[in-house]
Image (cartoon, rainbow, N blue to C red; front, side, top):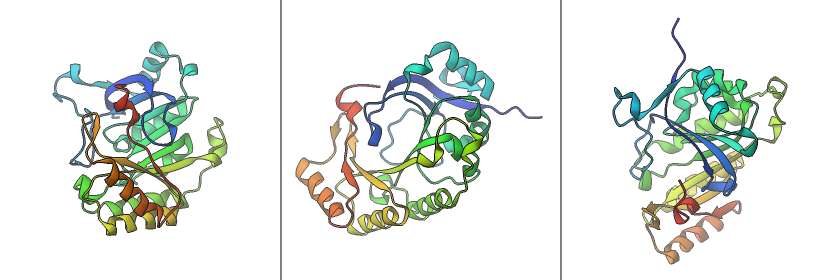
Length: 247
């Protein structure tokens, strides 16, 4: 029988710096590997050397649970953030690990993987999904993948009684859109279509270069206003942790 293990780049407690839950204290579990290769990605989610165990951790679900309990006080954490990389690559691992932890999970995902997604949905309280613009990310078939992802969530049947952790009917889903001055009107229309179809709140996030926005403020506001003319559930929120130099 094969052992269910996941490769994890790092585990640390910090302040959430993106999206609707900015300012909440979270325990970040950064999983290795991603199924995409976005042009703007600056997240160190890959092992520097896959053969060098010093560049990543490898855990079974029980080992990860023990590691967290030994090193962190979960009572001081608002959410455990599953991030990456792309944590949904490790769905089988998550399906075994999540029921073992009696706390709230916050899933950060590129919203392109649907395989076995329904297995973990009952244990996720917040889904922070990316919408990848081809003009900024370089991912060309993103809207088709996102539509499938949100459709699975919309039509999933979640038995809230199986978790006994919280009222999973109150699950919150929102979508982040990293953009720059190359964004097109067609992309804006596609984002708005997804948002209206799946009742998503959209977070507009200017692409960063280091700790600075890649585009000037008038351009950012102009793009924000284009979205607002088509859809009202929009917020403009940059990556606050980069301004504050928080990990």
